[in-house]
Image (cartoon, rainbow, N blue to C red; front, top):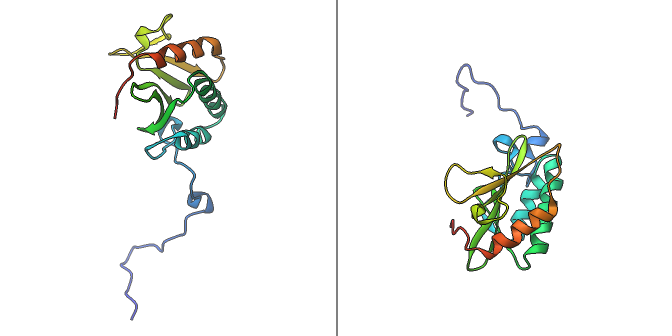
Length: 157
C-alpha cells in the first residue's frame, strides 16, 4: 500500500542536466574553484581548468612560468587554492581566484626585492593581484618565483 503524501508537499523534480554534470567543480564565492585537497600536478591542473573566463589563461601561464623556473616544483591544492613548494622547504606561493582578480601570494614576500606590490595585514606575505584589463611583468614574476623558491617556505600542513 502506498503512503499518502503529507498535505502541502510538492512532487520532487529531477535536476536539470547542467546541475547533474559529473566532475565539474563548483565555483565558490568570487569564482574560486572548489577542488578536493590533494597533492600533485593533477589537482592543480583541475583547479586551473575550472578557473572562470580570462583567469584560466592567466592561471595556465602562471603555472607554466613556475614549472619552468623551479624544476621539480611540488604542487598541491589545499584550502581550494593551488600551492607551490620545494620538497623539504615548504610552500613558497599560492594562488586564489576572486571576482575581479587573481591573487598570487608569496608567503615570504617581504624578503623579495623589489617586494610584490600588495602588502598583507600581518606576517611576511606579499601579494600580486592580476586583473583582467592588465598584463603582469612575466620576467619580474619569474624572478620572484626563483628567489621565493630558495627561501624557507610556509609549512601550512
